[in-house]
Amino acid sequence: MKGGSSGLVKSAAVKLSKMGEKTKQLGTAIKDPHQQRRIILVIVCVALLLDNMLYMVIVPIIPDYLAELESEHNKNNLDIQIGVLFASKAILQLLVNPLSGTFIDRVGYDIPLLIGLSVMFFSTCIFAIGENYATLFFARSLQGLGSAFADTSGIAMIADKYTEEAERSKALGIALAFISFGSLVAPPFGGVLYEFAGKKVPFIVLAIICLADGILLLTVIKPFSNRTRENMPVGTPIYKLMIDPYIAVVAGALTVCNIPLAFLEPTIANWMESTMHSSQWEMGLTWLPAFFPHVLGVYLTVKLAAKHPNLQWFYGAVGMVIIGASSCTVPACKTFGQLIAPLCGICFGIALVDTALLPTLAFLVDVRHVSVYGSVYALADISYSVAYAMGPIVAGQIVHNHGFVQLNLGMGLVNVLYAPALLLLRNVCQMKPSYSERDNLLEEAPQGLYDTIRMEERRAKKKGYSTAGNCLSVDENGFDPFKAQRSLSEESSGPEYT
Image 1: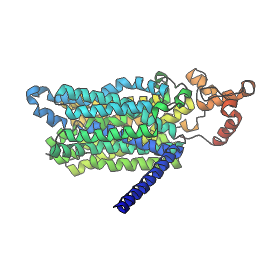
Image 2 (image 1 turned 135 degrees about the vertical axis):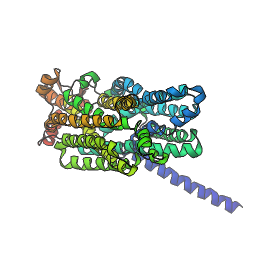
Image 3 (image 1 turned 45 degrees about the vertical axis):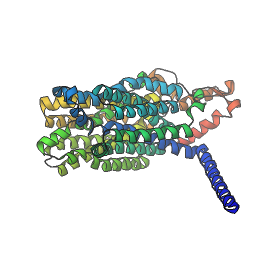
Image 4 (image 1 turned 120 degrees about the horizontal axis):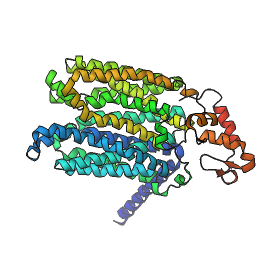
């Protein structure tokens, strides 16, 4: 017995030792900056996946569930109530984003991401237990609040961690793939679980994943012990970003390109039922095949941007033309198989636009403003929210008053007509931060990282200071502005590309 006990003790000690070594290795990996930003990318991608699954998972669940509560609701107003419920998330997100962007610029990216995940967790739990319209409406609105923090801070964190343009495009492309996967897989995921396990199960599964992602964030980033935010430069206010013509063009493109998806999601199922007599499974799987061309569009844009980075505007313009042509083709489809092609075209085009223009926003902030990304990606989130806030409310009215064909032709025409506006971005790749450009275009002193360093170089001998928005002492931090300037000059010997 003693021998057996001692053997068990030794075995347990060996296992504990191995666990300790693995824990140390994990701790070392977390501290490594290269590994840490990969883990951060995973955390952000999971947060974006969850948010978009929560956005779309209710599509097959809520209409049927509310119909069962017919005694509590006026059936004649049910369609309106469902539309308002669906839009409430985007509407609140639209209202909160200007505030969340400013908050992110002030405190950094990690705490707002944690706030967003926490709010999303509670909203998902409320969805699971909600048994009346008011509770579900509150949960949906609360999700918009969480998204305003989680989405904006997550995308901004990626842009901040991946500073090299090719890496940034790739990382943002991966994030967009997770967004697409979440949006397109959520309806069949929710529909199957709702059918066989009840309303609570889909939301409980998503709440558990959300909780795990928040715990990983606390473990890896440790938001409340991070002191780097004390040295963060002051970001450009969102209202100044909105009047920057280049950023305004990008924001407009993001809104316009998402209108077909936002307007078709609440209307296409009824149209399929009335014109194609589609079954429930066909309506539930309408958008799932479009995931694959969306990922293909992300992949192609990242690859093309690496080889020809000066054509980012062109990729976006081509994407808008593809969206426009595909949208006009939708009403001509007579079968489910035919419908797959234009829907895949819409999602492929959206992938081109998003993947090309989201990194462009970060580049524009780098060269024309301050390298702090909370407000600019809050502006991007506002662009998406405008489309998705109008979709459930406006699209149904257009179909009712003018018809489904006119809705699609209008959306297609708007995309095709907007595409030439991206020509304004054709020289963005050649922009270099300079005092004269900022003084003439923005009527303010230089604030960005690169142009501030160049301005400070002129008086470095006199003052002995270097700045990235914070005027840190050279002696204290070991930063040489002349070395930085030489390095930047070497890196920018050719044109600077998005």
